[in-house]
Image (cartoon, rainbow, N blue to C red):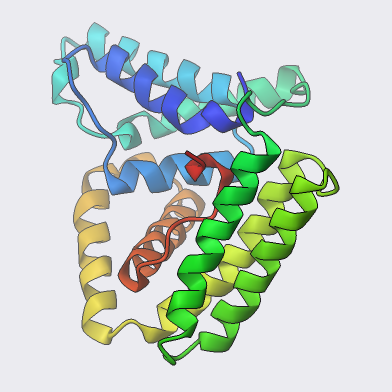
Length: 228
């Protein structure tokens, strides 16, 4: 399984396991899957954990369609990940076809353009937006010249840049906007807290609030997963 299919593979597999037609992951699910990806949980462990969770539900006579969140599978996913770590080391994952230099260059320039527009509004954080836009444009030039390196390293660079923008986003949102995000997270997470460790919950909270902060600022995600 390749690195950049991680999200869609999880969503498709959960949909099939649920066996109830249309299903789309919630913002909480996306944050949780992103936390697994960033923590290095192998994709095959996530898929195996989903299968195990639904198999256990089947033995208890529960309806699959009543499971409305990937978070339901957290315990089994982490168990499968621990088992995988004990038995083997993953082979280096290769990026999917379609990440040609022109496409990535256009992606970087698009994100740079969004940030330059924000910088031009003379709002708090304009300097960070401008500097990040310049970094993205340099990345575009380098990847178009074949000098940027492997995609794993590109993703790391993008994470660093997005972290800077997310910090600004968190600082400019109002107290009410942040409170709304926290309430929404608590409501979504409440049914699954007992299935997660404190560390998993903390990581998920961080990812979810970060996502909401960026959305509140109107900034698109910079991860290569969002390349169209």
